Image 1 (spheres, rainbow, N blue to C red):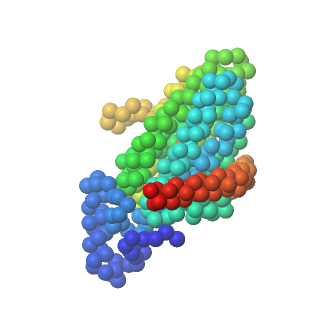
Image 2: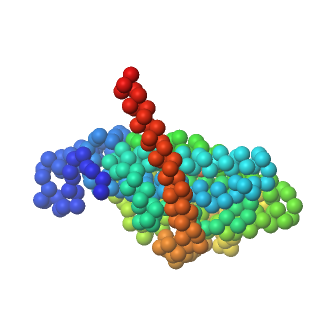
Length: 337
Ligand SMILES: [Fe+2]
Ligand SMILES: [Fe+2]
């Protein structure tokens, strides 16, 4: 378990909690309401800390596991330019994982513990990375849609109440927009190419569209953590709001490519409220059973992903040992000098 700077028992009913703690909590909520950033050494409710550790570490794991489906195509990229861009993109994702682990560590949890939770399958990561990358067009679809959905999710996190997470997100989002463009550019090139290339792009879109909509999490009515996270200003928009924003942004992009989204129910619903918005794209029913299956470990690649990550971790042991030995030697030299 992670350590807590100040013990807060906010699972206990208000009546039996000490007045001092209720005061702390009221002050904390007032700071959050005033849009102040909460920093690592500040008092925070235990449940806030726990929620953030869970969310930030799941996010970090997603970045790390997210390298696997795309890493699969680095050696098979169709040109040196594409290879260099994909290599840079995958490397960025590794960096995102590291910023996020570092942000989680500020809450008192250790990197080893988080890594262990991932490697043993105890921790979750984004369900999207349990789908296979079958063709080069999948690399385009992932950049365009998966990184596009990540941006939608992450832009509001730049204003998250927890300072270290919010600051990590600002940098991450800048890099994500490069990822999204490199993906869209791959799609555009394929769609302006031969019939076969365009068919490849369409096939990739068909397979990635619905899993991407699932990336925003369960529908609001079934979402466990939303209310409290909104009150704490960790979350700024609901899952369904973000999903709708993503659909509205993506439909015109698909139209520009000349591709068809695999949803017969997709139609534009003009705004009737007269509030100045432009209306929304209505989309069909998401297969939440599929989502539950993937989350439960039964997606197409769950076992492969964990096996690949465990293998990489085991093979990297000598590197970690060497880095530790180097750091110890350097410290000893500095102390001697
Ligand atoms: Fe990322
Ligand atoms: Fe990305």
